[in-house]
Image (cartoon, rainbow, N blue to C red):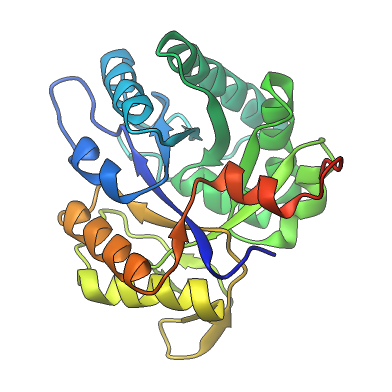
Length: 266
């Protein structure tokens, strides 16, 4: 369990494509600690990936591969019927591509996080979660895998990699704890997102869409770089956390602090 006074703030980004620009990634970077960068399957292209990685390295952020189903038109938010082998191979392809750019820019890859539909699929299906974890292990067993809850932890840890859970202050939750995915990310009130982020850090709780209360165990909170007011949201969240004495720290450092000396959590 993470110290309530420490939290990672991660953002999904690098989601432009060619001449089409989505989000203001670099403007968000001063307010966060980790980024998950699109690898070309739901968004991103070689130029966008390189520019985003370069900026993330310059800002000292933890970098992750944001792997997705092959769905450029649907932005990776449409479910596909995929076998675990397909998921594993697609994830390995994307992680490898992102890692090549990170290495070229002098950075270090820190985590792997499924995107959109694949995130929901992995959160509900241990076989698919295990497939992403296996691909992660094939690249580097020290990489973290980010998912919504501990429900699929045995499948992830069974492949020899760590699972880190996150929460989403800029998305609604169903009463069962699953996410209500927005096909096109909507603008949220920055102060509301900031209040929810602080509550996650302090109380490990969030309100579901029906007003019921959910327990959330999260080392990290995720903000969406494709929201129309993403920079304002990131700024409000960071100001609220700083004001409350919550230390914003990259996820791998949080996990390292939790792991006893000489131990290696698997």
